[in-house]
Every structure is written in C-alpha cells, then in structure tokens.
Amino acid sequence: MKKLFLALMLGMLYACSSDNDFEKAKKQLESQGYTEVINTGWDIFCCGRDDTFSTGFVALSKDSTEVRGCICSSVLKGITIRFK
Image (cartoon, rainbow, N blue to C red; front, side, top):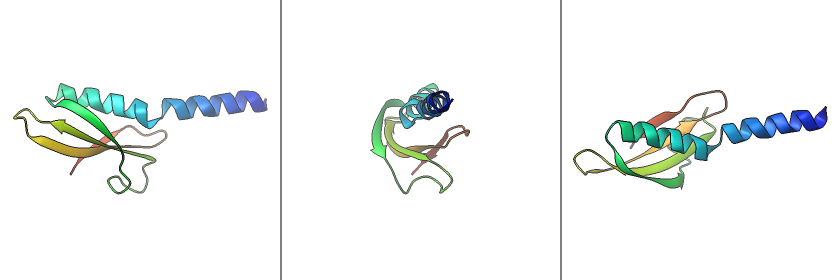
C-alpha cells in the first residue's frame, strides 16, 4: 500500500512540474502571437505566495519587442502568466 501511495504522489508531482507548466504556457503565449519564448528559470519574487512554481520567461511580442514575465502555478491549480 505504501508503494502505491508513493507512486501516486510521484505521478502527481511529475504532472504538476514546472517544466510541464512552462510548455503549456509557451503554447498559450505562442497562440497569442509571442515568439521565441525562452525559459529563464526559477523567478522567486514574480508569483504570489500561494504559487508553488514560478518560472521566468523572455519572449518577443508581435512587434518584436522583448517582453519578460513568469509562469505561476501550484498543485491542483492552473497556470497564470504574469508580465513584468
């Protein structure tokens, strides 16, 4: 029983990982016209305190202006994209 519980917990953590959330957010940004979306890594002060993951990004807008922001998420919550 303990092994099953551990396997379920690891599966949940994998499904909620910041890499997975970054890929979801990247697709969302690209659908809005942003290009060259690059993961800049953990961004500790960008998201709210209820968020577990905070991943920074840099992208180009439709008019080729560089934009910066972060992807915020937590377990059992969707992603939020914040711009700086």
